[in-house]
Length: 318
Ligand code: PMP
Image (tube, rainbow, N blue to C red):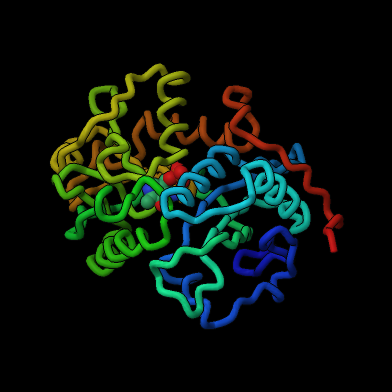
């Protein structure tokens, strides 16, 4: 399927539904406003093995449950149900390419209710879309430190994937693009580095991998955890979680963003300061290579992070 086209099916409240038939009433505004949490999961295709690998599916679904719990969205589905639904959907959509999987939980039937009235049972949707990997592209980006401050735990908790949180990052990335950068890094209200819109920040300095703690206004990122584990167990690097000052970004040896969508994206410049030598640093490129092999099932270490989906052509369900 070409990027931009839609898949045949999505999963909606326990049923596999044709893409065209998944519609809601226009007044059900909670769907699109503050009443939703979501996940972003990726699956990678291996042409030689003719297999698709979903990356850390259980961890993503566990986080979806945490997000729902925090915003008081009750559900009767468990992680096992959603895991099954995801795998069945990928097969039905004949996803034989790199794919993005997006579960969304939202309060439904809220047309005539106030926003404070929570739904008695959340509606759940899972949809998939092609998303080619950029991990081996050799690209790096230029970022600015945003003039916007990252939301904080007592304002709108960044540790979960609450849809409303994303306006904060969107303002920062729109500002960055308008100012001629590719993306932004936001600081916390305490002026410590928090994260980029949609990705965590990793810095290499004197051979150590340093990243902000989960108490500095960041999502509890699954890629961040994977990168820290690979750096410490495979590259034998010291991995340090500590607050980072803005000016440390300018003096870093290497800098990169990581996340499901960003994978491992090298940062070549911050606020027009060149990072390190300006190219892709040694540690960053080693991590990119290892990550690519882990994601595509070409590396035995960390095999438990992959859920294998045997996607045969022409077996779509009705
Ligand atoms: N921070 C934010 C705000 C994000 O939206 C994401 C993407 N989910 C990340 C960090 C990276 O998290 P993960 O590695 O779990 O995708």
